[in-house]
Amino acid sequence: MKTVLTGGSKMFNNDNRETEFKTMMPKLYGDWGVDSEVGKLRAVLMRRPGKEIEGITDPAAVAMKEIWDVGKVREQHDALAEIYRSHGIDVYYIEDMDENLPNAIYARDLVFMTPEGAIIARPAAGCRIGEEVYAARQLAKIGVPIIKMVNGDGIFDGACCLWMDRKTCMLGYGKRCNASATAQVEEELRNIGVENLIKVEIPRGCAHLDSFMAFADLKVALVLKLAAPDTIYNELEARDIKIVDIPDYEEFGRFCQNFVALEPGKIVMPTGCPKTVSALEKAGVECIQLDVSEIIKGNGAIHCMTAFLKRDSVPLYK
View 1 (cartoon, rainbow, N blue to C red):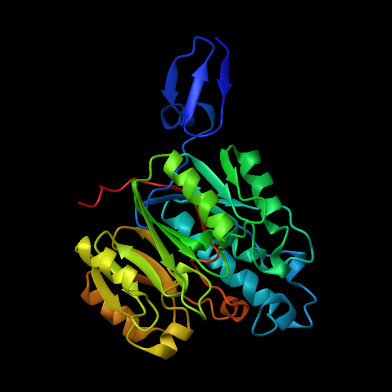
View 2: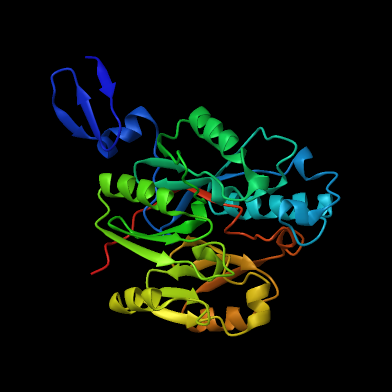
């Protein structure tokens, strides 16, 4: 029987019967999907830096703090990928990239994964325009369904969104996600069953939600209290989520919050943040530390480098 795919979350066959897209997705595309920041991580998309990081002479022109040591960047990137593999996580790479796009190492900004497929970003920074094309091509190559590409006058970075559970998502708006993109992403999330869309204005001076917060466990979030708006606190407290304040501003500058949960209560995070590690361990979180000091010179760290493709689902928050 011929199957016809349509947009959104429904699939129709030529007998006009309806089947939820999510139900058919593993058979037609593969086992993909994300609905949290902490469910056991199964697959990621990354960009191992190639020629595009060589020959940079003006770091400011490509939104970086300092010129990279190319060898160290690749070494640190490989070390993160090895941690993922050692935990049974499949690592996929964006294989091709324009040689003028060095920020592609921060793959999280290019893809926001949902339970039913990927939303392809439209980067706000001029020096990043076009990176998303290569990410989209790679997703198509490995079989990840693409359910939305931000278009029109929308601008959107993938790190502007954080999942909490299947029905709850945070959407940050500001200089990296404008009103047009907010409406586009909201429409698609509503279409796939998101009921609680928490809209958060990203504070001036921060690029994304992961600039000042991250989930480390089902009931633990690390947050910079000086930056987070009341919306964040109200939503976390309503769900009895323990808020761990980033204890040291210098550690915030070393991207202590830019970590990835490998599973509930177990994270991989940048080195050089002992006070934050202590605070998280007191909250029951196991911290694997990785030196990404060279990568941080480009204004990103572990969470920025990692586009999630598959996580186990988590229980709904009550």
